[in-house]
Length: 374
Image (cartoon, rainbow, N blue to C red; front, side, top):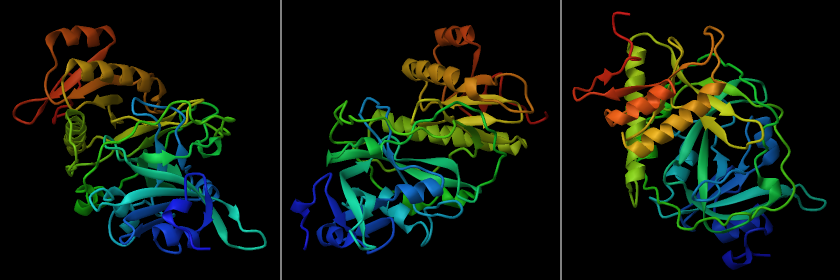
């Protein structure tokens, strides 16, 4: 049987041969671009992913735009990348809008009867989240080795299937597991081809309450993991840019600049990756100074709204930040591109949260800023 686009709808199960007839792509691999069909086909295998230390699927928690589907990039061994042949599939995902291609997601469900031919269920069409297209995540592979993987954040572009079995497992308990700092080469974060694509904002909100069914099985445990912070210093060219997307870019640039300053003083810097009992989302702090035990929450503007958001986030995240070499919770500091309104200082003082902001000369101002002679 030769499939057509019309015969493959969300929820349909097909072989890869049938999928290729409809949407193109290669006969093997997890990320399969097709120039002819203007498609990038993403294949997820739950068994392979779990052995490799990650889960693909829907987050149970919704934000103001609806549901997010997380898809882990290509590369089963070592740190994933956007560079070279190894990163070609990951580049195809990030540049899909620039190349006028649609993301189509499939998940493996089994095999044909009395055959080794795998079958895949079609979830539907997606696009990258325009605000946060991907995050870096620290995972342990099947041999227990730590590595950094790319997790793409997908928003539905058209009709999709929400099935209970596709929800990422929730964490069963909260722990704070510390993983020693491990350097990552800047090249994997700073590929021009990977960060020049146009990213559209989602075109359709996902309807709430559309994933009825039994809850997903929980993870074995929750962890707070010390990881390398994002070094996203190359500007994104964003289609339909908004003030929010510009602020995200400014936040990344500000965080990278302040991290570079701390590193120049010999400080050990990183971030915390947090999973909370009962939640499927993985949270990531912006910056952590392990030398002085200071947690930073960065924002791309000094607006009242951003300061209030940063205050809530840092009070939340700091509860989970524990280091054997330091007692108690970290010093909490908000990192801003400019000084906030004077009355906001009294608000932050009430919760013992400090402020560091960038001065006109490019330096940083604030009680938490370490000096070069320390």
